[in-house]
Length: 279
Ligand code: NAD
Image (cartoon, rainbow, N blue to C red; front, side):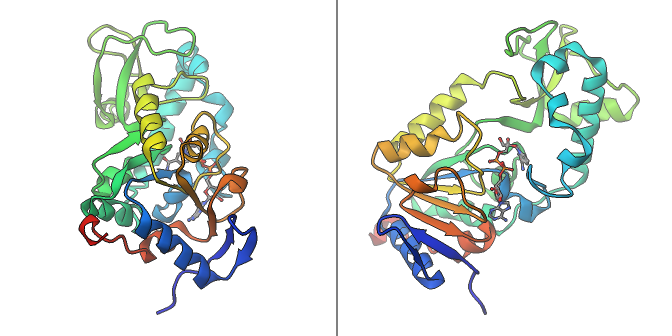
């Protein structure tokens, strides 16, 4: 069987390294780590059939991301209706975890994983079995009341929260813009939309994980969306080795200990994470 096709850059020696050498370096970093944090972006889920922002046939060729700001969602029933249609398309893909999600979930049993921080809203890490997952951009699996007229990009709801099935059932039954059954407020997918404030508790948990990691592995993120992309920087500043696994260069390659270019699922699936006791 062939191993993953990779190229790599070892920033500690600033030279391009051969594929096998890259994977060996990665394996060595994993073997030496006690507190691994994996930070994932849309690129880990493309192998599950969910397009990232860059995919030629992706969701963003059908919908304009500029329409989905928090303020527009609050102001326009038309945008809300389009947004539920987009969610319907998304869940219609029936995405399943891939080798990358499964590998990360299996590492939990080794006692070396501190947690997963994800920018994704698809819930596939949890489906694969990961239990300590911080979803810094929220989740499309739930919907929540955001209040009657929230301002400053900040949800102001009554606390009503349900699985996304609740909203999809109403939408499919002919209600294009379901309202909160408790207070009559606007209901929205529990994701952090463009122009929406992030959930402070999630940012705090993610920052704590990043600062305490000794190995911080970024997978499938263009590392261009802030403040998410600040997390690898904080990890590096606090002494973690930073690995970037992506199929194209990122703006943070220069702060990484090791850059591995190739397919996320193949690379993660090829790694062995030894049990803590074998250290
Ligand atoms: P992005 O789309 O900006 O970047 C994804 C990166 O992954 C790109 O650099 C791409 O080249 C790379 N990539 C794609 N497939 C890969 C693979 N199989 N192996 C290795 N690399 C691969 O994504 P981002 O950095 O996560 O930022 C986009 C934002 O959009 C996120 O905040 C996220 O909330 C949201 N988003 C989420 C999903 C999801 O939940 N699955 C999907 C699309 C967008």
